[in-house]
Amino acid sequence: MDMESLMAQAQDLQTKISSAQDELAKMHVKGIAENGLVVIDMTGKYDVVSVNIHDNALSLGADKVAELVLNAYQDAKSKADVLIDKTMSAITGGLNM
Image (tube, rainbow, N blue to C red; front, side, top):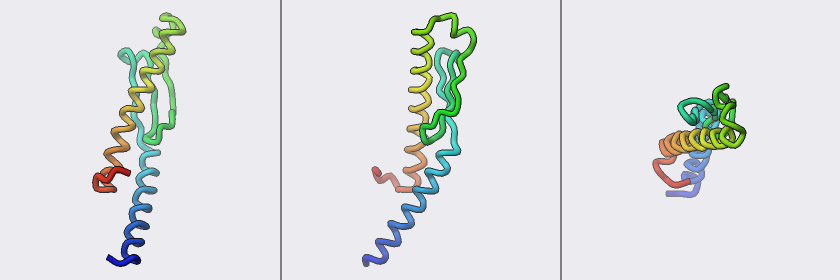
């Protein structure tokens, strides 16, 4: 394989990755804690779009609410990780980037 062909493939891969990142920014996942007492909406690029705390959660106290927010965030991040892995794997053919 010549260098010119290799460079063209690298450029194509870079374009595909950039496009996938744009798509991930438009995709959303929801992290849920305690049957919906706290719900976090996050993009496929880890941007938190919203945090919803149900009124019933507030009676649990600040420490419990903080724990629920953390749990919902971790759930959303985990789902975003899967989305990112699936999207990027389709482009890179499973190469670990």
